[in-house]
Structures are given as C-alpha cells and as structure tokens.
Length: 132
Image 1 (cartoon, helix red, strand yellow):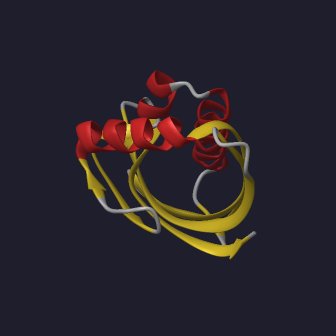
Image 2 (cartoon, rainbow, N blue to C red; image 1 turned 30 degrees about the vertical axis):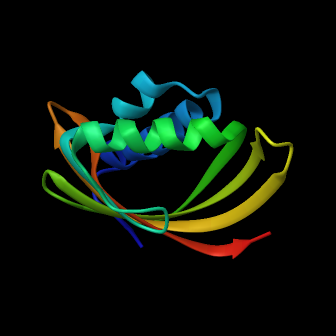
Image 3 (tube, rainbow, N blue to C red; image 1 turned 135 degrees about the horizontal axis):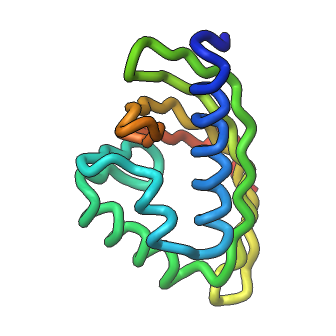
C-alpha cells in the first residue's frame, strides 16, 4: 500500500536509493546520514541501538566483506504526518575477502521520521528470505 503525499513518498524512495548507494560504495558517512540520531536496527545480523553501534556493525561487516552490490525494491510506503512505515526487499551480492561470494534476498520493515523535511530511518528490522 502506498499512502501519503507523493512528494514525501518520493523523498522516502530517494532515502532507500541513497542507503543502497552508500552500502554499495562502502561510504560510511553517507550510510550514517540515512539514519536519525537515535536509530534502532533489529533482526538478522544483530540488534543495534544508536549511531555508535551502527558504525561498529558497519566496521565488522567490512572487515569480512570486500565489496557488495545492494539493490532495493519498495513494497509499501504509508505516511502519517511526520512518521512513515515502509516495506522493502533487497538483493545483496557479497564478495568476501576470502574470495567467497554469497547472494541474499531479504526484507526490511522500516519506520522513518521526517526531520527538517528530510525522511530518515529511525528503525529498520531485517530478515533474510533466501541465502545462497
């Protein structure tokens, strides 16, 4: 379901695109800029609260992973005032530093907030659908 002003839905779509781009480019500052100041990340891969824990998680991933392609498809965006809920699906191809390659298909259930007119992730819950 897609509800709410089209302008806000477009900004949210762009947030997902910016997130995917930051991950694929290994751009920590751009990744962190996608989140509110007090984010929560739950689900597969661990639970993290706050930007410091997100940065530590990022560092842990990139110690093992050499490169990653991360692509997102939006399934739903529902806006209510300054809050939004979204559902998305991602396809990840990871090449590890040991030479192995893995592919994942996962889903996110998200909460976003409008902060000074910009939509940011405040809570992301991730689960893997397919791993290979």
